[in-house]
Image (cartoon, rainbow, N blue to C red; front, side, top):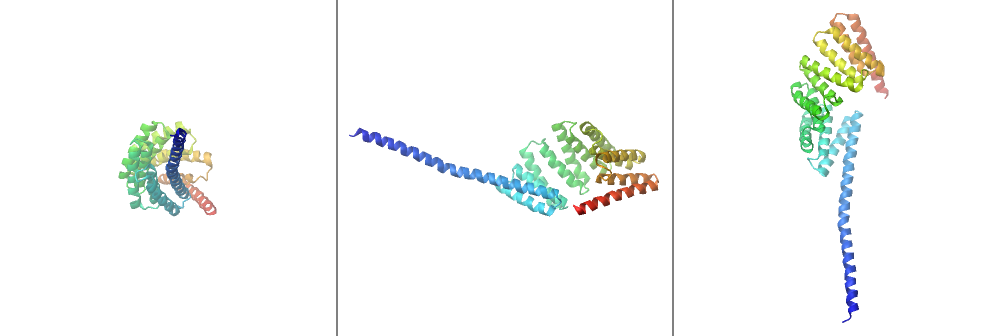
Length: 296
């Protein structure tokens, strides 16, 4: 028997086996690479649609934003599944757009679905869950259903305090939200306490001349006004006005609302001329704002 033939045969078999395994690996790798590329493409497609929706919403093109948001939701469900975080994010975005259009019956189930996804994806004490709860609270607030708004706003505040600590600016926002709900429920004492806490946090975070300080002072002024403390309300409104004027000038749109509040406070004191003066200034600011919007 020719032993050299056997050696060559074994060598040939080894070469054949190596080529076979290489070919097999290539065949297996191609679908894997295809799937990876497909998944990446779909992820990029979802992100692009989501970002487009957010951008259009900021530009007040709500109808176009809603179309993009629906498409983003469809891509998310198809690609990532109904219970994925991205689907929850898409649901929340679409719900917010429906809220802006006052399509409340369409918005509510989307918020609830998004909340359920977030609670499964993250811990129940996560800031992501608090964010959805805040949106749900505002959803009820804009419908003047303040009783229903109170619970999600309270829960959002509790989560924020546990997660960030009592002195965080996000806590100040949550305090303000709940305070405004209390104010609308005519729980002025509870509202005043929360606004005061929010102001303390803001002062430590931003200093005394930040526009968010003016917001808190104005809110506190409103509470004092409805409690019949008109002089205190006027002092708070004037401080808020002064801060905004130093920060961005007298034509700041926020000043129009403060000037109206000042007008109401002086009218309650029967100081009609001063009330008319502040009301006129408010109208001037709003006229300039409308003119600027038309030319932009």
